[in-house]
Image 1 (cartoon, rainbow, N blue to C red):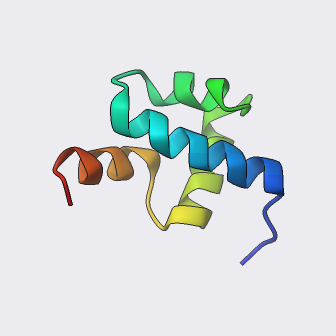
Image 2: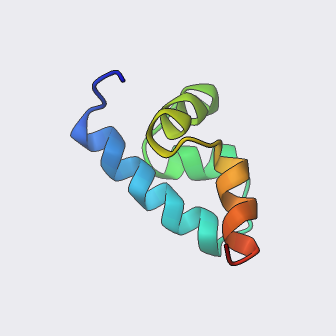
Length: 64
């Protein structure tokens, strides 16, 4: 696995909170946590969490 910076890890942690409680667009959440590019956000999220932000959102909405 590639090394992911502390700031990116913190951004992903915050994004997970937002994905769980907000109905906003994923690119808006990415921008709110410091990612300029939604595609890059998706890539980093998948590297850290093993799923896309959308998959994470669906999984957590179902209470799994």
